[in-house]
Amino acid sequence: MPRATYLAWLVAASLLAGGCAGPSPRPPTPASPVVADSAPAAADLSGIDVVFLSTMVGHSERTLQIVRLARDRLRDDALRTLAAAIEVTEADELSAMRGWLPTSGPGASAAAGHDHAGHGDDAALDRLRAASDADVDRVLREVLADHQRAAADLARAQVGVGRDERVRDLARRIDKSRSAEVQLLSGYDDQVSGVPGAPRSS
Image (cartoon, rainbow, N blue to C red):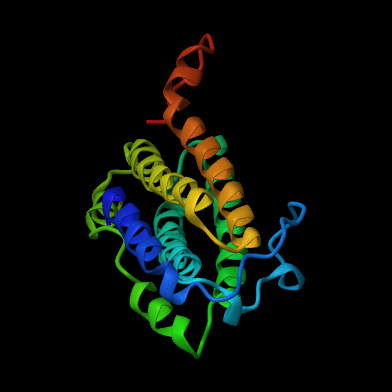
């Protein structure tokens, strides 16, 4: 799904927040790992927080599809290590976010409506499937950089409009981690070309 659509969801939810926001946000809490003990109560989440979490669930599910489709074919060790780290991180976040989302009550319909929302067509997966062994590293870098850039954009928007501070903290960490990944993926060719005698992976 295009980044503009993600942001449109957030804008729409923010306009509706007055009618479905629920209790006022809690005071800021220190940044901490995404664990069950720090999870916000699902019943206290505002509509904008539910939209963000459910959208990120779908986005992370697609990330895992992308990484798992290419991981066994990657030729470059550094890229393989990065892909493995992304898989572990997003699988952990995915489990936590699913636990945060409401399963009943007013927010559940928003979660159901935006979860598994597609997050783009299958063109990225098709590109990876069609990539030759010699080209799969480059295709993964391009596909994953674009995908993670969309996640960073969404998370950055959530920081500005989110209600629950713990969800906003998650959004900050997603923005930071995905932006760093994009920088690594996008700067890969420059890093390789700057090392004398270093072969390109694709």
